[in-house]
Length: 116
Length: 110
Image 1 (cartoon, each protein chain N blue to C red):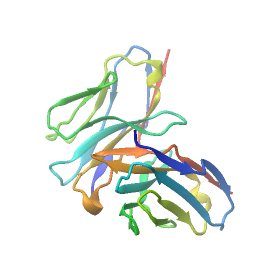
Image 2: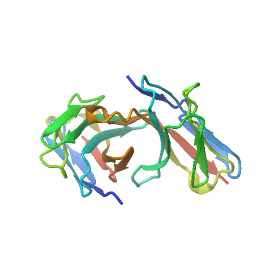
Image 3: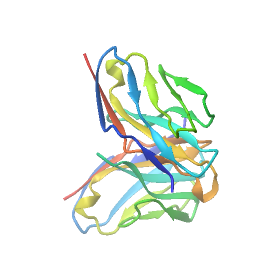
Image 4: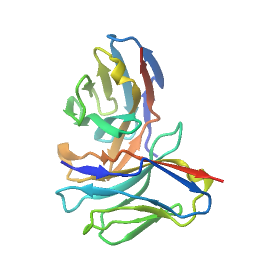
């Protein structure tokens, strides 16, 4: 079945440094969608980025990611971390085939902690 | 904006007791999901449904039942709550490749 790997459970950064959260995946579906969700404490997880297009950079709220199907990767990046970026980040995968298979598979999450 | 409402927001249950977590969505989405969140495990899918009166098993269904009596409502049922089911539970609905989450229910089994 589908799987998503986020190797880092915790990333601690100093404010102003670049952010890179790793995400790799496995799926048999060629039209898979990849997502990044952000979960702030005491809030609902919400969509940050999504993509299904190979080698196209997707940006939102200062974050960006590029889906690379050749390496099955969808790493999340930001040029300069802010204190307000501290949250739990999930990478997720969907085959978007609809019907009974329409579901998201999440990685284990990476907690980003930004310090001053 | 999609609205997914969970109740209760927190609950303490006794081991062996029955627990029902409720979820209501107001956007007429076909797909609804129950996820469990645990540190180190992320979000894991328990049950989901893509039509009223039908549910499907997710990745970790053991110890849980689900019920979708209408398009808007999706419940998660723990018939015999156990300590290992202490977690935060999220309901979600799906539309056009995006999943919309509720605020979560913190369940503590004692």
